[in-house]
Length: 343
Image 1 (cartoon, one colour):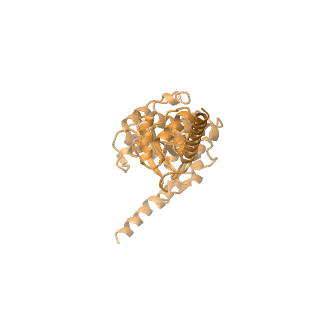
Image 2 (image 1 turned 45 degrees about the vertical axis):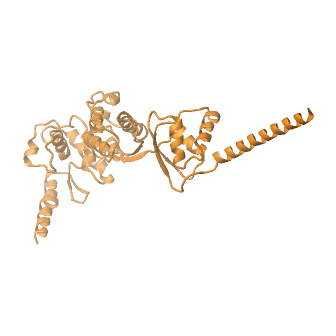
Image 3 (image 1 turned 180 degrees about the vertical axis):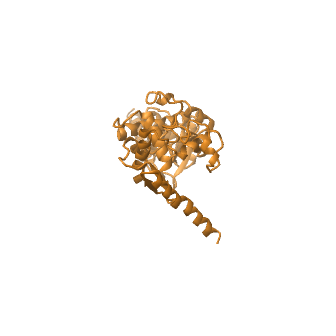
């Protein structure tokens, strides 16, 4: 009897030691960094089970043991779901690090840069070309003003309200999420950088900013150009802004890179050679510098400007002065360039 009790006790101690040893081994194994010394990528497809995911991660060398990882997930983390999406794991990595990333859905986000001056259609094309969604779906969303109607009750599209910036999105991001982010970013900049300290309506500000964006290349000139257009608006003089005609031609599918004399007679409300005042809507997405310039135009005496063909402009108070500048910086400049090119 005594021998039996001793044997049973010894067996129990051995089992406890074995369990403790296995637990110690398992805990150590779970917390040892695994994997090659390069980042490992893996995409979790919606509908995959945890077992399938863990088996694949084990095959990739990221997990030392799929069963141990499953036990850790169930009994230590209370069996949370593993989020679908594209992952990039720093390697080597421990099992808890790998699982934590997937439980929190820390998926890879890819950058996309939307430059200032793009139209709504160009923004949709760029996002689609970069692999972030379907062009027609983007276009349909951007043609609905629903998300900014509280800011601009007269808006018919999101033209002018898709803020240009560098964004980071996962490949799983929907077109709705992406468009909402562009509009939300505009709203954030409006609140933090512009507020309500400007004359007129927000719509007029955005329209003016969009024209300034297309006319100015130097940030230092944006307030001056905004001031010139403000002066013309105050005096009832046509804006004579080529970018508004270009926008109209783009809408008609007729823009080929050149404005011709006949285009100046185009019967469109966006033709600021024919119709005084601001055009009926924004012509592109303006950056923050142009929005600030439109909100606070420079107090300048100028009514005219012409390009020096290097990104800068010459400004003039009178039409006579402006015509001299046009002759020098456009007619004579381009005659000289053509003559030099023919040698």
